[in-house]
Length: 252
Image (cartoon, rainbow, N blue to C red; front, side, top):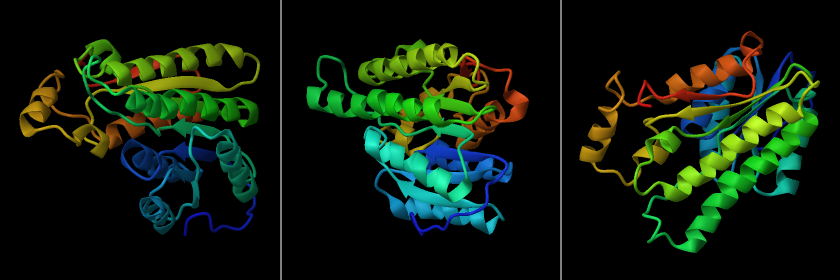
């Protein structure tokens, strides 16, 4: 199913979701489709999971395609936007949920690991945002995914938090650079959320401790985050602009 599509008539709104094969990205893609968006599900390597997202959307009556692209590769990302325009007529919403996370104390982190993570999280955000800034239609929305870990300052998160700090800086500045275009640019910063990315490598004690930190005393779910992203990306949320919204149950 991946990248197999035919040109179609333009839909009222069209969304690209990077990292749309799993976790927050997948939930967001399905939520946007339920709101009436035609959705382009971007993935880096796991076409099988991306196809599952597309299938869930189409079985519910929506329209979606899956397109492979490395978010840090400018030619591949340009091709991703080309595919959206060919299939659905344009792009109105971009949700940049693709990211990577490796945890280690600053003193111990291998610099090659640092470079790979920052290539995805920093360069990838810059490349996706650059195409969004050039190609989103008036009335559109760009939502980057950051992390509430910036405020928590947890040991072991130095490199990841630094990359998300860059994401927030890009978000706030780009919102102002797009003055006059009627395009919003925001970031959503989840707290501890029960995704594969978050749970990987953590023992039950650590997960339980983190779940107990918010006043609501639980981990977030991908649906919690997707609901907020979908609102910010919708016409109803269009007055929210140039913001970092921390969706973390009150943890910070």
